[in-house]
Image 1 (tube, rainbow, N blue to C red):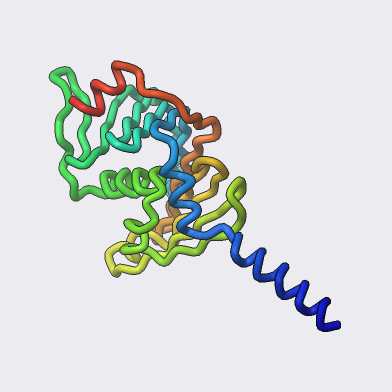
Image 2 (image 1 turned 90 degrees about the vertical axis):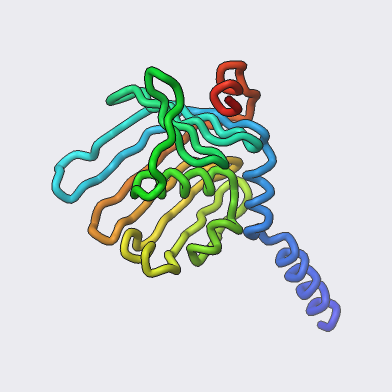
Length: 196
């Protein structure tokens, strides 16, 4: 009986030692140098019967930033990096004011895609469930400002983030899907856009 208890204790301690935690998730998401893929974003507004849908491509370079290349319903390119958020127009990249709800949402996407859980922990309570290839991270706002915007944020993924859902206090929500992300290299054009 003692040996059985000892074996059970060892099995439990081994499984606990290998539980998938925030550090594991951070490491997993930050390992690839470059991740690219298509995205679909649905904005569900209480006042509209159908969601507003936009589609495009994204490029996340660990050391340089994020390109968010919107293709429909309109064509618009965004860049997020250490210098802030910029939008491309006919004359090049133009800095976007950083105090809008859209830019805060984009910064949140950037932190999530990079696996920056330490940055997220400043603003949210984090609750991670699952394993490396099938996990869910729930974010509950800590600050009064964020509590006025979001009730919670749900992030799902495997090797990469594949779904983010933002649930807002007013009843609206945003669902971002990135089902076909791949680890790859930057093209010369992407490198120029991110480093310029």
